[in-house]
Amino acid sequence: MTADIRVSEIFGPTIQGEGALIGLPTVFVRTGGCDYRCSWCDSLHAVDSEFRHDWRPMSAADVLAEVDDLAGGIPLTISLSGGNPAIQPLGPLIDLGHERGYRFALETQGSIAKDWFGRLDALVLSPKPPSSGMDPDWEAFSSCLSLAADRPQTVIKMVVFDDADYAFARGVANRFPAYPIFLQPGNHTPPPPTEEEAVVDIDGVMDRMHWLVGKVTEDRWFEARVLPQLHVLLWGNKRGV
Image (cartoon, rainbow, N blue to C red; front, side, top):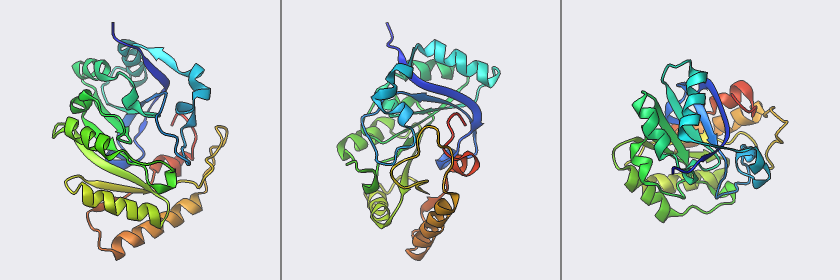
């Protein structure tokens, strides 16, 4: 019997707000549970065990049925997020969705490698910088890349708050030169907003964006792509958009 997926929320269609697929119409399946606890996490409702009673155990068929209802029966991209979605048994969902014409993108910090990564359409690996308070597991990260091989579109995306994060990002890019690099300014400083708080300091975000663009251009780091979180600019940290 296939294990259930712990689902924090399913929402959309909306647009992907960040990274390589920014602007792409998407339905989000946000899973519950994470092996990290980043200092600036903006999705605590999908991370903290305090919220585990809100996470629904769902079969792959039930998840896809809910997505299908939201999408009006028209296949589109399904973004698998969290928490850390790599914790969940998502292989059957990916296979079932592909049979019906859906595409799958997954974002994870690269701390848990799964053999079904190679069946994704897009894999976003987001190693956490010093400002997160977490230490990347580079052996696991490399395993994620190996399991994905050359099948899904694979990119590395990093949040940058300050000079230490920027130096970290440069080091990651040097360590994995074959992969496209996406950088985004963090959208708030610790502690993160409460669940009720959807307002973001947009001026602060844009100041950090200007600083980051300046750093990249001054350093002639022309391979890096710098993008804001579009959904944050549009809706702040509001859930379900």
